[in-house]
Amino acid sequence: MAGYSAPSALRNRDPILAVLRDALPPAGLLLEIASGSGEHATHWARHLNGWTIQPSDADARARASVSVHSTEAGLPNLLPPVALDAAAGDWPVARADAVLCINMIHIAPWAATLGLLAGAARCLAPGTPLVLYGPYRRDGVPTAPGNEAFDADLRRRDPAWGLRDLEAVDAAATAAGFLPGPRVVEMPANNLTVIFRRG
Image 1 (cartoon, rainbow, N blue to C red):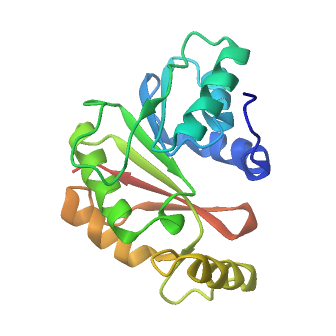
Image 2: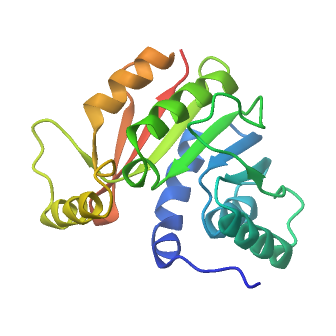
Image 3: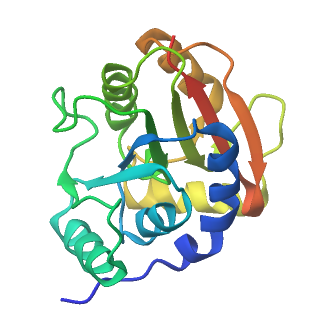
C-alpha cells in the first residue's frame, strides 16, 4: 500500500518543529503517540539532528502508512512504528527523553487523555517534556468560531470526542506527575502547543 497524506500535517509540521527545537534537549529518543500518516515523524527525523524518532499508533492502517513514509525517507534515526494504545496501562516503549502527541486528545475519549498522561509519566524522567498540540478551550479566552464548529462536528460524530478544557488537562497532568502550569505556545489556525514537564 502507499502511505497516505494528511494535509494538516503538511501545514503544521514546520510551526511545530520550531517549538520542538526550542523545547527539546539536544538529543534523545522522541516517542510520538498517534503518529497517523507518519509524515510528522519523518519530518522530525529529517530535521531534529541528534534525535531518534519512535513513531506509534493504535491503528494498523496508520502504522502501515508510517512504514511506507519511513522506507521512502531512508532515515537511520526513524524507527519502525510500534502498536501503542495511549489508554493502555502498559506501553511497548518503557523510556523516552520526550513524548509528543499531535491532534489526538480531541478525537478520542477522555480515557485516552488520562492514559496518555499516565503513560508519558511512566516513560519520562524528571524535567523532560510531554508536548501536546491541537485545539483547546481555555478559561477566559473566547473559542474561535472555527473551533466551535469543529467541536460540534466532533461531538456529532462521537459524544465522547470534543475539544478539551486546557485547565482540565493541566489538572489531570498534575495528578499524573507533571508540574502544574504548562508552557502554552499560540500556533496557527487557533491551535496551541502545550509543554508539560515531568515532576
